[in-house]
Amino acid sequence: MSSLNLARISALVAVGSVAFALAPAGCIGGYDYSNVPEGDRCNPYDSHNECGSGLNCTVSSWQVANQGGTSYQGTPEVALGSGAGTNSAGAYNVLAFCPENYCCPVDGNGNLYPPGPNNTNPNCQPGCNGGAASICASIGDTTAPYVGVCGFADDGGYPSEAGSTPEDAGSTPEDTGSTPADGSGGG
Image (tube, rainbow, N blue to C red; front, side, top):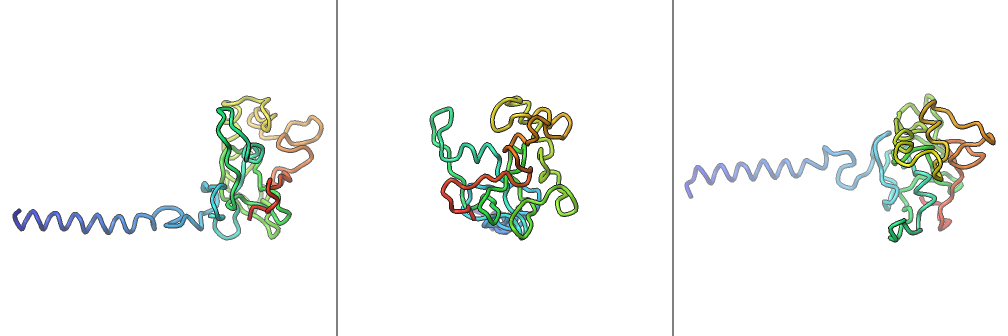
């Protein structure tokens, strides 16, 4: 092999090695997937809260209702891990009508902030920036735990029957009072 080809190959390997070494630092979360910023996706099944300071990983009401059970296909559903955000009482931080999990701001007690000055990210609002419309289109308006989702997606408000939210009767969107099945508090 000529020395010119060997030099080109060596240069390509060197550039590739540097790019490979720097790639995780350029990705959200870095090597260990920590300090994920507000409004970015997170994994509540992870062994740690990967969200940045003052943030918790939200949990969907479907995940709370189905953890540790069996799917319609007969496979076991995974129980939520320590990465699932909980408040100081051990209740999961469920974001109303949201099919995905996002890092969202919490107060000193670990409760999700309601929409307002401390919570302006659209992914951290009830309905998750179009998530309610997605749930409505995929499963409809009558499937638990998302009863009333289509009305919410249409007008951005909760149904008025019985004066409750569809996520969990008598609760607010930022705290549905769902507690971890194992009683550990999840965090």
